[in-house]
Length: 289
Ligand SMILES: Nc1ncnc2c1ncn2[C@@H]1O[C@H](COP(=O)(O)OP(=O)(O)OP(=O)(O)O)[C@@H](O)[C@H]1O
Ligand SMILES: [Mg+2]
Image (cartoon, rainbow, N blue to C red):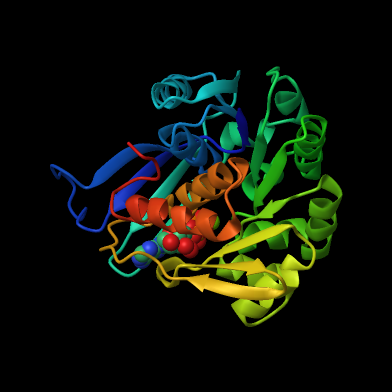
């Protein structure tokens, strides 16, 4: 069993051709949230996975839970009375993607939500930086670390965004990651540079790999870079026509965690992650289906 801890959101894609008051198409609604997406990709890869998160006690929250359940994910989701289900507006422009989120019930996630999951075997715990923006903050990472340690499981962490790193504090985040026992660090290139205070992404990987067992950095169309034996190795991305990169990093994380948990070496784990991320960028939305 893999535990995935973090956000469950409604993604509202605002497409660039939505210009008039009344149109036949232009908005897409999809289940989202970085952690929930990773859970869905893990399930699609045949893994048994439990998602830990919070939504509002409303019909949208119920629908998001139902959808995730249908995608093969076991739910440890708490519905909170009086809280709004989290939602994100994703503005899709030809050259960029702008996200604005209303985190709602995701802010109320607590360590007790992780500790309440009673499953005999846990092979990996994956938690996102977004999960640390909730009121419990670093307590979430500490709880994930305790569960991983008690189950002899891998602990993987995606810092989620430079904004998250800055909000938490670079130094505080680093010492909390080390204290929690993060085994697999999965930032993107911007986040890796921010965390390491290195301008060059290869240098960032080498620096981070001194502290963390496995470091894999996502670099968009440039593929990914991993650290091994004090060196940085780049694996190019698959050639795809990108339709929507939402969830690419989440799919990538799912494949890395799956492969490492199955005992693959880091090079093969990254190759499978590049392949799965290629599938994610060639379709709309952050989930496999
Ligand atoms: N334009 C692209 N063409 C091909 N592959 C891509 C492209 N963009 C992303 N990828 C693949 O997706 C992986 C993860 O994407 P990216 O580097 O954008 O992660 P991220 O910034 O964490 O994404 P997210 O917004 O999902 O958090 C890359 O390592 C690469 O394999
Ligand atoms: Mg990311």
